[in-house]
Image 1: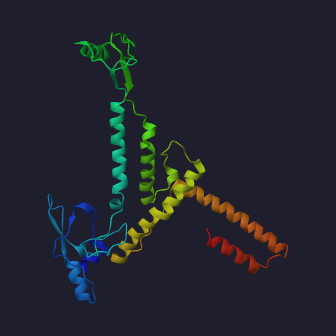
Image 2: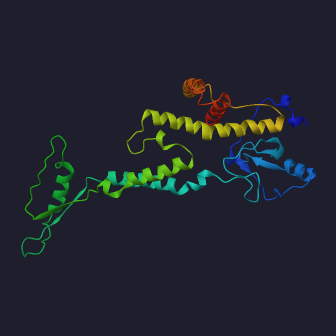
Image 3: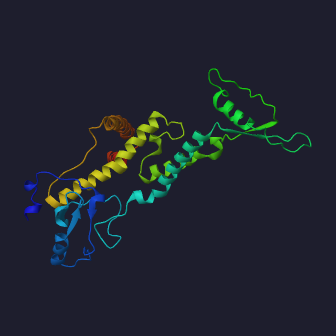
Length: 288
C-alpha cells in the first residue's frame, strides 16, 4: 500500500508515550485473519489531547518497546522501567530533603536551668530569659566581634541539638538506591562514582564498550529492523566509526597477526595440519 512505500515518507515524528491516550473502546484481541488485523491497525488513539488533539491510526506508527509489550489488555502498551523505580527515586528525594532539613537546623542549642546540689531548679529571674536570648542572637557566636562566653547569675545547663549526618546514613541510603536505578537502566556502575571512588580508565573503557554493544546496539538494531520490515529497506546500525571501536579494531588486528603467526609455526613444525590450523583459526574468530 502507499503507506508502506518508503519513497512516500518524508520524515518521522517521535511521539511522547505520556501524551498517547487510548479510549475505553480500543481493543487489541488476538487476530486470526487479515481482516481482523486490518481492523486493529485502523483503530485510532488520541495524541496530545490537551494541545494538538490528534487522532492517529495504529497503522501509521512504528512502535518501539523498552520492555515486552502485549502483557496486558492492550498489545501496543508495555510496562515502564520508571514504574519499577518509583520507590528508590522517592527514597532518594526524601533522603535529600531530610539532609537539607538537618543541615538547616544544625548549630542550634538549648539552655535550661541547672540543678545545683540538692536544690531544685529555680526559675530564671524576671527578664533574664529575654536577656539570654538577646545575647545568644546578637553577641554570642563564632563570627567577627562575637563572644563565646555568656555571663549570668543563674545556674544554666547547655545542650547541643546538633545531629550528626553520618549517623543518619542518608548518603549511604542515596548511594544504595542510586545503584538500583543504574542497574535497572542497564548502565554499568563503572561509569559512575557515587561514593567518591573511581574505576580505572581501562575498566571504564571496557564498560563503555560493553554498554554500547549490549544495550545501545540492540536498540539500534530494533530501530532499523522495524523500518526494514515495514518498508522493505536494508538499513543497518553500526558504531564502528566511534573512536573506542577503532581502538578495538586495532587490537583485533594485532590479535589476528599474532594468531596467524602462531598457526604458521604450528604447521611448519608439523604439530598442526593446515586443516587443523584453519579450524583453530575459525574457532578463535567466532569468539571475537
